[in-house]
Image 1: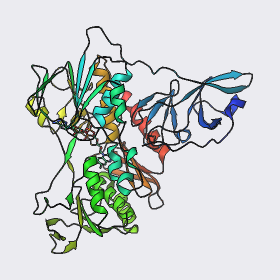
Image 2 (image 1 turned 180 degrees about the horizontal axis):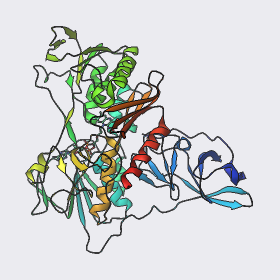
Image 3 (image 1 turned 90 degrees about the vertical axis):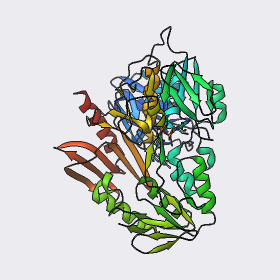
Image 4 (image 1 turned 30 degrees about the horizontal axis):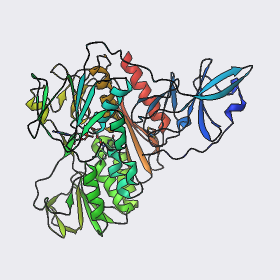
Length: 510
Ligand SMILES: Cc1cc2nc3c(=O)[nH]c(=O)nc-3n(C[C@H](O)[C@H](O)[C@H](O)COP(=O)(O)OP(=O)(O)OC[C@H]3O[C@@H](n4cnc5c(N)ncnc54)[C@H](O)[C@@H]3O)c2cc1C
Ligand code: FES
């Protein structure tokens, strides 16, 4: 997704600013010509970087400075203030940087500079020459990008059974599905990127098995691709309910760009849609279809949407938010059959529908890991370096189960940012680094104009503390066990969410 054009606002930083105006650890929005620039102070050092996050254009001056980085308030990307490098996903593109100079009692922003990103791993002679990535999604793409960022000059082969190059998957249930984002926002990079970077991206290529002892990947057509290091990033696939009618042409699941295009094409002639499932993807789809003016019915077995993850209060809020936008819920009910015109419910009712989207969860794609003989426990088991039980094979993203240093539990999550950050960490380690994956899990979800940010991980809690007012869309909800905060969900409390992330990171270090 491209960032909106920045608007120059605040002081002209080239004219100098009294040093005392900016306290240590603070950010200030100003401009240099037409460029919006954030000035940051750390001790007596000043840094100047572009003010607009390169992910979706978040306002970095409203984010949080942590040591010599700035974190984006919207989806927690982290940028180096020294080099502008996007050190942590979801942003992948660096910020512009300017030099600064203190003269007398003033700090001046001077020329634009292009510092080199920091090298986080030393490439040893005799290191890997050929790295194969299975998966062209969040984790696979972020890994390949990081390999090149770290100056890895060997072969990178990215195998994906998708027919599209890596896409911004979260957009497929949000702006792109709603019709408010053009398709050029969807690819993470254009096709030329892969050629320029020497990434051998092979689409429509299914890997049939991994031969760990021969260090080879066997493709469906029988051909083989050898590797020195392998990253498994096969993601997840939507659960398909075994209902009569699931195979009908107006019934869809949503994972790929192709799926999304098919839903959009059908939506053009749809008057009424049924969404099965009231969790994140189902409700984001409901919101997007409402934006298209379609009547939407949501059918789900639970009493409250999202209660299992967000608790009853936020669950009720999400329900009323969707109802305000005209969504009709059929909760504590399920579909038993679908025919060409309607969905038949267990309760005995029927709903006429020209379009049905099933968003009832996903299943990690573990088949390759299983046949390779890797240790599996409801996910591919990885150590803190994201290496599997087979030397040289790493796993990241929706398939990986790792020991989360914050909760202490072995967890597997289905979050975009986690998948990308794991891809980045796995890349460093495939090159011989020893980077622990220690990022606190983070995800966001968007419903109409309401974003929900969630940091941490709480599968259950014994206390739920609400700060602020959920109905007023201004809150931070803390999920605690034995008095310890496991996770924080927030609406329009971005700095609180960032601070919670930092607190959880610090707690891990103790
Ligand atoms: C519509 C939608 C909206 C979402 N919104 C959000 C959100 O707002 N926030 C959030 O945190 N998360 C969101 N998610 C979840 C997020 O997209 C996933 O957690 C993330 O994509 C996982 O990344 P991954 O790399 O593990 O897998 P994926 O991105 O699914 O990539 C897996 C890749 O592996 C390939 N592959 C699998 N098996 C094979 C094989 N045998 N041979 C070759 N290729 C293979 C696939 O084709 C694909 O390219 C959303 C997901 C969807 C579907
Ligand atoms: S807009 Fe900054 S992380 Fe998404």
